[in-house]
Image 1: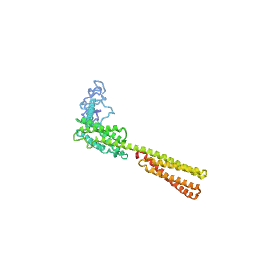
Image 2 (image 1 turned 30 degrees about the horizontal axis):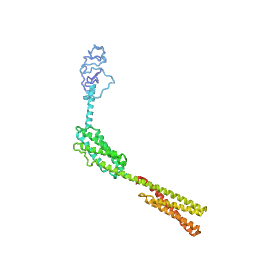
Image 3 (image 1 turned 45 degrees about the vertical axis):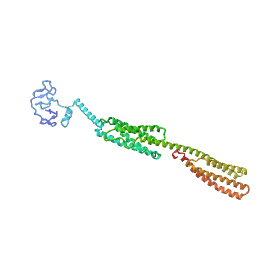
Image 4 (image 1 turned 90 degrees about the vertical axis):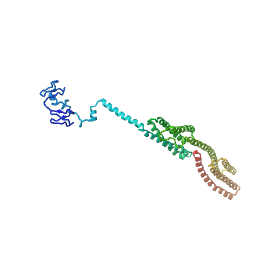
Length: 424
C-alpha cells in the first residue's frame, strides 16, 4: 500500500521509518482504518468504500495514525519537488501571498531611494565640500590663464592658434565642473552657496567664449559689445567669489579677473590701430603698383615700336627722315616713362623696384641715342664709324633685355607679397 510523508508529501517506501526527503519520522501503519481521499473521513479497515462519500478504498493510502501520515490525496506522477526542504525565508516566501511580495517590493524601493538620496547629498558634508576645493583650484587656473596669457603678443597670427586651444581646454574643465554642481543637490545649509556657484561657473564659461571670439578677430566691430559683456561678467565673478563662503575654502583668486577687461580693450585698440595703418599702407601700395603697371605697359609698347622700326629699316622700305623721326619718338616715349616713374611716390619697401626700373629705362634711352648716332653717321657716309657705333648699340640691347626680364620677375613677386595686407 502506498503511503506519503505527512510533512512534505513525499512518496514513501513501504518499509521506510524516516522520510528520505525531509527526515520526518514515519509511524507504523496499523490496521485501524483508512482516510478517504475525497472527503477526508476516517473509515474502518474492513470498509471497502467511504461511509461518508462512497469513494473506493483502494484509491487512497491506508493509515493507522493520521497524525503521522499525510491525509492529502496522492500527488500527480509528474509533480516536481525541490531536492531540499524549504526553510527560513524560503519557506516563508514559498507559503507566499501578494501582501508579502508587496512588502518586499516596498523595502527594496526604500533601499534604492535612500542610497540615491545619500549619494546625491554627497554622503557627508566633508564629501560635499570637496567639490568647493576643486572649484577653487579650477578658478585659480582659469584666472591665471585669462589675466596672464591673454596679451598683445599672444594674439599674433603665429601664436593665436595655441592661445585659442588653451582657452578652449580650460573652458571644458569649467563646464565639466558646472555640470557636476548642477547634477547634485546642495548639502543642508549650503543651498545659497550652491546656487551662486552654478551662476559663477556659467559666467566663467561665458567669459571664455567672449575671449576666444575677441582673440580670433580683434578688429571685429562686434567686439565693443563683447568687451562690455566681459566687463560685467568678470565683475560679477569677483563679487560671487567673495560672497561664497564655505569652511576651509576661499574662492577669491590671486589674479584679479576684472583686469581681463582692460587687457582685452588694449588688444582691440592696438589691433585696430595696426589694421588701420595696414589699410593705409595697402592703399598706398595699390596706387604705386597701378602707376608702375602703367609705366611698364608704355615701355613694352615702345619696345614693340622699336622692333618694328628696325625691321622696316633693314628692308630698305623707309626714308631716312622717317627713320629719324620714329627713332626720336621711341626715345621720347621712354624718356616720358622714365620721368613718370621718377615722380611715383614709392611706399616703404618699394624704393628698390622704382630705382631698378629707372636704371633700365635710362639704359634703353641710351640705346636709342646710340642708334640715332649710328644712323646720322651712315646718312653722312661715315660707314666705318657708323658700324662701330651700331655694333655697340647691338651689344647693349640683350643686356638691357636680360635686366628687364630679371626686374619683371622680381616685380611680380613683390607686388603679390606687398598687396597682401598680412605682409604689411
